[in-house]
Length: 134
Image (spheres, rainbow, N blue to C red):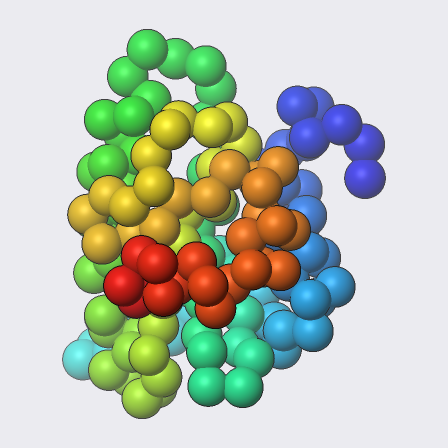
């Protein structure tokens, strides 16, 4: 893939999907589902053993209000993940994978992982989830 800075948001999500595939996750890409008559979409769902990562990819620019936007999006994503968990009976871990590092770890129920740290996050997934009490 070319430089992520030049990638579209679609290519950014594809990059996240490819990293999960590399780590042997069963990947559902741009998963759309209905619950109680309402539609929902999660960018990337990765399942491995009894673990389900629900990822919302965020390729925001360098704007001043980015962290407040990410916090709002985290709350929406957290609620989507609760619906996903209920609909499929899988403990669904909400992740926001961001293009830039916003120095946020957990916000509104979501774990924040900058894309440049996603590989390391997945390599140490069990320890990180335990440390963050997920």
